[in-house]
Length: 246
Image (cartoon, rainbow, N blue to C red; front, side):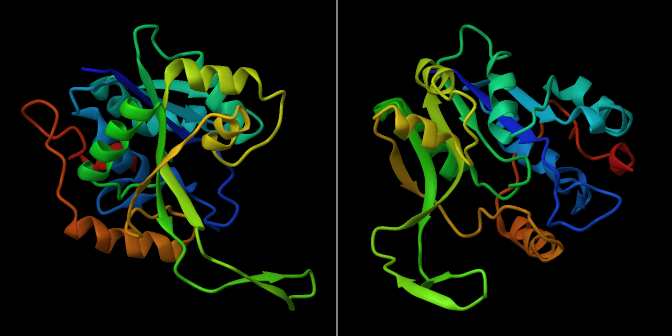
C-alpha cells in the first residue's frame, strides 16, 4: 500500500472572510473549527501516515492556546507559513517523512471533501503520478475590465475549476518546487505542469467547497449534514469537546 502525507495550508490572510475574530480555517463550523473538519477526512485513513498543518507565525500563539489539545491527540505536525502560499507548501514539504510515497495538498478551509473523492484522486495519483479533483465549469464566463464592463465571453468548453486534494508522487512535487524559483502560484499542479508533466483530472463535486466568505460557512454547514461522517480515531471522538476551539 502506498503511503501518503497530507499538507493543509492554513496560513493565509482570509481577507475576503471579513471576520475580526477568526481567520476562516479556525472559525467554528457545526461545533468545531473548519480545519478540524478538513483534517478528520484524512486522519483515520490507513494510507495517510502524516498530516502537516501550516499556520502563520502571527497566529501560532493563539493557535496553540486553542488547539494544542487537538494537535497532541491527533498527532498532527504544525509548520510555519511563508509569505506566499507556495512558500508555505515548500516549508511543509521539508517536514514530510522520508518514507512517504505521495503528498496530497488540501486546503484547510475546504471541510466538505468526501471519502470517495479522496479514494478516487489518491488512486489516480498512484496510477499516473499526479492528480487533482476538479469540476467542469458550468456557467457562462465573462472577462471583465477594470471598469466593470464585459470585454469578452469566454468559451467554457474544456474548462475545469481546480479543487483539492491535489496529489503528487513525492519526488515529483519536490522537483516542481525546486524549480519554482520564487514564483507565486495559486495551486501546486501549476508547478508540475510547468515541468511538462501530465496531471490527471478527477471529477469532484461542487459540494467540495472552499470557505471564502461567511455565506460559504452557512452553506458548508448544510453540506456537512449530508456527507458521511468519518469514523472517530480511537474509542472517543477527538473533536467532541467544543471548548477546544473557544
